Structure formats: C-alpha cells, structure tokens
Image (cartoon, rainbow, N blue to C red; front, side, top):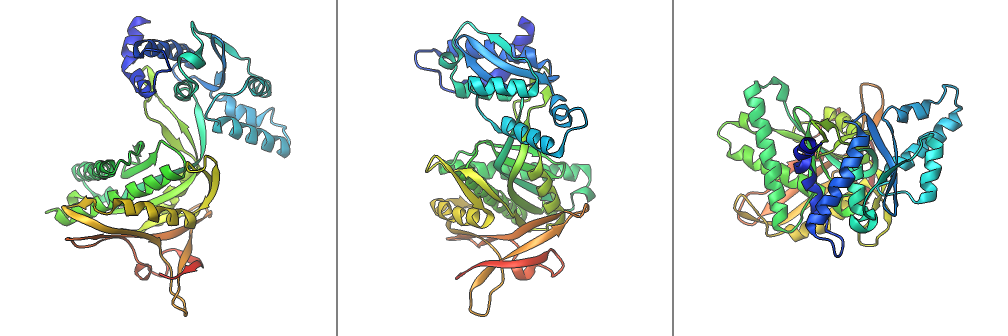
Length: 414
C-alpha cells in the first residue's frame, strides 16, 4: 500500500490549492486529504465503482457506492416500467448527478432507498467538515463519480482539411493551434482574467471549456475563443509556409453534458472528459461550418450569476450582448506589437428597409435528420498601429445553401 500511495502522491497535489481550514497546517491538510482519498480510492476499485452521493458524519463520511452499470440498470428496471416511471427515474438521476455538493442526511437516506444501495461508512480520525472543508471534500469525491452539468459553455476548434495532410503536417498544425491557445491564455492573464480552462483533442482540433461555471466563466471562455482565433490569424499571416498553421472554423455552444474522470494508471485522470448533448451539438455544427466561420449554437438556459448570487436565464442573443462590455477592459492589450483600440463581436443578419440590422437564425439538418439552430458570428479587432483583424464570415459571404435561414429577429441599430 505504501508503494501504491507513493505513486499517487503527485496526483494529490492538485487538491492542495484549496485553503487549509482555520488552525490547520498544510502538512496536516495534506495528511487528511490522503486519508480520505485513499478510502475513496479503495471503494472506487480502479474505476469499477462510482461514488454517487455522500454526506458528512462527525468522524467520517457516508457514501453511496455502486458499479457504474447501476445508472442504466436503474433506468431500465425490470423491463416493465411505465413511461411515467422511466421519466421519474430519469429526473431523479439528473437531480442526483447534477448535485455538486453533499446531500443532507434525510435526502441522502431517501436517495439510498430509491437506488437500492446500502450506504457505506468511511471512518476518519477527524471531523471532515472541520478538517478538510466541504468544498474540498466535494472536489475529491467528484474524481470518483460522474456529474451532470447543464450550463457550461464549450468551444470546438477544427482544422480545415486536416485529414488530407501528412502525419508530420498534422502534428505541426496541432502544435500551432496549441500555441495559439497558450498565447491567448497568457494575454488574458495579463489583464488578470484567469480562466481555469481544460481541453481535449478531437484528432483534428480541440474541445475547450472553463472548469468554472456561471455567466462570468462562460463570457471569459468566449473572450478566450476570440484571442485564440486572433493569434491563429496573425500566425497564418506571418507563416512562410501556410501549411504549418491551420485554417480554423469554430463553434461555441452552451448545453448539458456529463463530466467524468477516466482511469489512468492507478488514479482517475487529473483532468475531466465531457460527453453529452453539448458535444454532440458542437460536432454537428462543425460539420456544417465553412472555413473561417464562427457559429454560435442556439441555447436558452439558467446560469449562475456571480453578481447577484442567483441564477438567471440567458439565451444566445443575451449572452453575446453580455460579452461586449467586458471586451472594453481589453482595450490597450497588444496583439503582434500593436495596441487594441476596440474589439466588437456580434451575430450577423440582414438589413431591413428601415436601416435596422437583424440577427439571422439558421438551421442545420444532420445525417440523422435532427435539426440544430445556429447563428453566424463576427469578431472585429481594431488595432491602433496595425491592420484590423477580421474573424468569421460576413452575412454576405455565406452562400445561400450554406445553412438554411429560418428567421431574422432582434432588430437594432448598428
């Protein structure tokens, strides 16, 4: 066991970013983390089991642990469940998996009875709430379970023509895109915008998301997308060989997904993976995006609003409008040695007979016949002593058969 723990200590370091509870040294916090994590790790059994819920006790935790097929088995039942019961069970699981924290004792016991899982007690030589803190316990337990997230924004970047490149050209282009991601992140850090972003490769691009959630976190991710695309455009201008820098198409969407940690060696991975409706929607969107185009998916969801502490319902049009004010704080930031005077972002549309501009909504039909609604986005970056950077396609650049227009709404003066 000592050798196993020695191999896992570097994985545990990530949890040390949480502040130690009052009166507790960092050394003691580390020891408490190890004790709890080792107990959860034993129950996890190299990924065979998942932690579905937990509640703190005076000196320990009660947890619901079961093999991962339990989720689908609970939904299927004995095969003779009524549609109403299937719906009820589905909603129950959604509520359980979307919970980011502990369950109170009564709710925990009710969930155990519903799922038919006998709670297990993890005994600890300390009060976990006082000697770790509930947020840290939730972060540790999350690595051993699955979470449903409803309101996180995700970006998908795709390198145009990637499959036609040689393997060496492919790796050079992916490295170029990775450098643009890092450069954009560094630019935002200069303005104290610290995005806790994660990414996973699709083979010819990346999914990127903010580990933090809420309106502000999603707006910051949109800003990151803008600067990734800007850095990529500048890199393409400077490149002596255009094949070394990818031409990108990008999609941005907010939607539900499951977040999980795969088994890697002896541990869950230190980074999460996403799978769910939002990644499916993005994949369908990118299939129909044109080279250089930026698509924003149509969404309408509740997001946590840090300014009020509550939740606010935001749709795609509201969201893009909300991204405009924070962009003003980035004026003066340098791109390729030239200061930024202004960044404007908007969804495109047609001008009507009165001179007002609309926002055009399009629909995409995928190979399965499902319809996905999207908007075409533009980003213009004006620099004081440099040429403007125009990202995305104008409305007039879109061929009539690119995506079928279904509506022109939200008219306003340009």
